[in-house]
Length: 168
Image 1: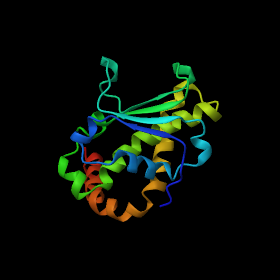
Image 2: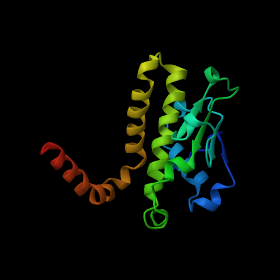
Image 3: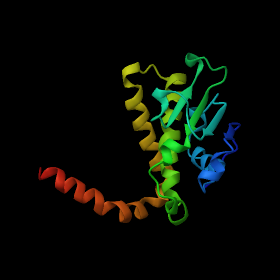
Image 4: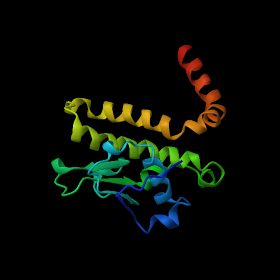
């Protein structure tokens, strides 16, 4: 996949390299390559941190900071601990696309917040729904080649989940 050379600064907290066997910068650049340029115009940086501070932020996977939030330059902050806390370490080695998929979900969600604030007059109550829809769409673009692998791995689980949900 062509990794476009966007002028987005990617800053990785040095503590993360010891926690996760995952190249964050490479994977973020890979995921950004499928995003249309106009969607990330004016986005200054993507920062990956180990954890957030504050009680309300303990469960958050990421944040978008734009001018409304007091940022000089729009940026995205992603919390690796919150995204990967449920992933066993062996997954990073055996199925590296799975951590990339987890990262993509948060990255694309936050890019959606950036894009909707630049271009759309979306009401505040629809921000999260719009961000989730955008994230799903971008993951389909980014993981087009993994479609069959994901189907084989997760298809039976989804089938049984739907089957048992109908029988309740």
